[in-house]
Length: 262
Image 1 (tube, helix red, strand yellow):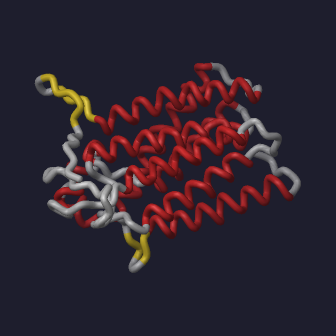
Image 2 (cartoon, helix red, strand yellow):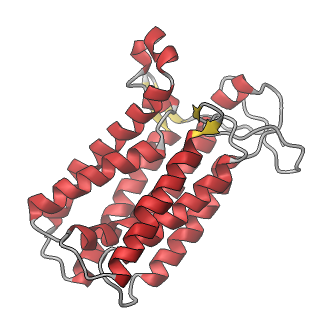
């Protein structure tokens, strides 16, 4: 299947509106309203301004973590092209680094506003995974986060100027960004269904970490632009650590042990 995708939605003179940035903007707006609704439902003492304050700490740290994680794995390229380091509109945001940076931002925000960390995290993860799904639309239009060559009928030939088209010119590729978008939407549905069930704070966050680790681990099998740790995909290492270190540990801590302080 040949694709007519283009990363730019609208160009007016020197001004461009790119799908990549637009999807993040939509994710921010939709995520804000979802988080605010959950904060109110759970009875957290956070005003609209407080939630915006938390967002303005968490999102920049998440983006910074995502970019630094990616740059560290591509140091040879970025050492030769330092001006490309801030060019996130060209792609190159690693979700595992973003989760680490975002988690730090959320912890800072919770301490700043004096609310329980795990309860605030539970309010956030449905919006987070939905935002990740929206972000994959940007990846699709950008032609990054692409897959390996495939003979399946839904394989996509990306435009020559895209990262995917440059790596595999004229070759149908697994649309891994679509695979992950579908997985993320399914996980969003699960989290949205579970959010009203009685559970200790942190339960929903544990389900998010475990669920997303599985989604990303499976999709990474056919990713064509993977970051590597020797012979192992970095995404598989990070997903395993998140599944065990955050998911199972948090689930066990919040369900089967006395609740620790947030």
